[in-house]
Length: 328
Figure 1 (cartoon, one colour):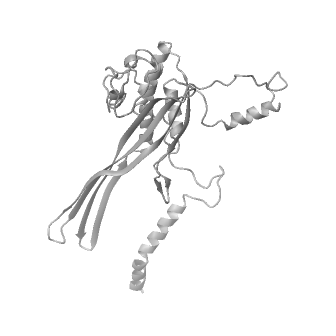
Figure 2 (spheres, helix red, strand yellow):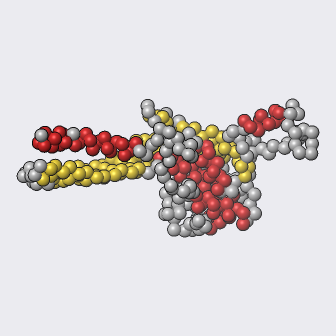
Figure 3 (tube, rainbow, N blue to C red):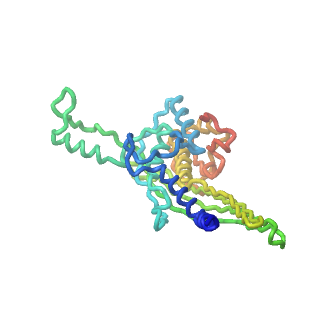
């Protein structure tokens, strides 16, 4: 009888362990809401942090230079910066952020630009409609009055789009098996992979009054990803050991889009402010001939086309440009 019980226990040992493990996992979730009104407590405790790129410091530096020199820039509006790549996943949706316009607005704000809202005016238009019908009242008045010219106009506006998303520009990898012919000896597997992709966008700055395109920029940024893994396999009498560990990481695609936008805004605002050498933000003269990043019309005296400087991958990057000043 004892042998029968021992056999039954050994036969049901693994299913029993599985049931115990499942019960332990379900103990973290209750079918009845707790005193706080939730079924489970969310995990994670990372605080909210800033979301800078390597070019954010240069944008802030430009704002400080303009403020210290009493430079009053023109009013700028940001229009639609759309995703023209057409890349989407059947399950995950669009591969590229649809919020590039919002990133551009944030970049102009970092550079101290005078922004006027044109991206979403639905609330303002509704309020204007209500005020025109005398339905909105302000404190001390019967109704809000509409004054001619109360809404400031823009001098320039930015539009464009994300035009490139190229997967697997280059990839390399290795899979290595290590072990002898004896089946009882341990065997090892090592693998590693690297792959590169890129995103690109085209932006243009337009004079609101004349519709003259005064600045054009085309930039791209490469993104790298890597994957590493190691495994070990061996027999120990009646035990089999199969161990594998590894990890993979990829530079964030959407952060790369933000970086490209901020680099473009840095170049445009440097030209708009008309500050030679960006007022000490960089240690070299950025002025040069028109390059492959695009051309623009200088908006102030003493500036010239700086297309060559726009092609410099180190310019304005607070991790690469040794002459950058005003870092956070």
